[in-house]
Length: 399
Image (cartoon, rainbow, N blue to C red; front, side, top):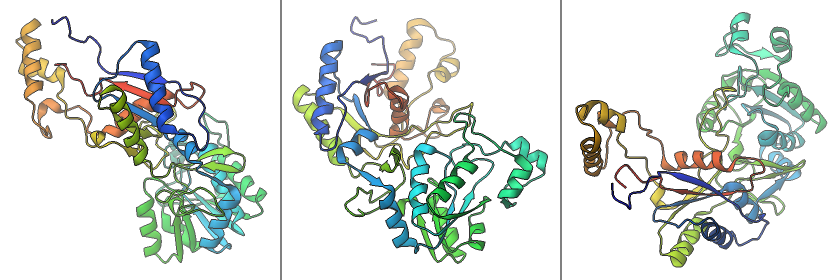
């Protein structure tokens, strides 16, 4: 072994930063925070390190907020202020409740259609076992609120303890609108109740809009069509609207950050100027992974990374070491095995699709993989590390 051979692969470090406020020079703060961490902790930056910034501080620095009243004004202008069908929302106080408050204030009546047994990202309204026991087909059967209660009673969320059916109904009434709640999984079901629709699904929104319009809806807005331009001087997101928003206060949401490619390029250039190293930079939100206990898919943002430098485009191009060790080089051991595997890695082509030695590696976007690592590293609470430095991600066994 060379005395210079590294004995550590990928390292993920949470970088502490000052509390970010609207108007702060985020590129300067992130750059200085990373360089100060390197100095104090005794590590050096290397080419192809990845500096990742959580979307929340980007949006905060941009001042990208909207109030309940802003949302209400936009909803009323776009959907007429009468009866509005609101379909397929996720069950979340943080992600949707404030949005729903604004929607309800912009309408006379809300027909709320909830998917079941769970929402799009896996929050459960009722267990599949209870569905089976009741003899209900969730693909085709439509339930009223009374039928839902008759079959399933009260079902509180496993982690939050909230009965979201009651919570959303009460919230709508508190905002001065009538409410009718139904349970169905076919988008066109809502057209029996309303023809002005807000479809609140995230990853399936394009298909839902297409189905509704093809079946006679008068007006269809996704959450991405609400707050996609400023209202009374508010923030907005031209591409995603309310998608990716989070509760900020009881009457205000922080929107997903607006265009921020310039930010990641600025940080990349500053690091190159100060260290001579070419790093990659990305903004990240939710990771893309599923919780095995609660069955919740983490990704409530429309994308993991709304902006990143070009070196993060694409997917990994990796060989499975255990496949090589157990198959191609099963008769080798020690230094001979190491050298054979190292040579295979050095000689691998640019595209390993279909190569048996790459099976079981992860064919996902680099930004989704690294963003998930960063989301787990930074957490969503009080760690105080909204910037994550990932080193060695692009290393392999030969480095």
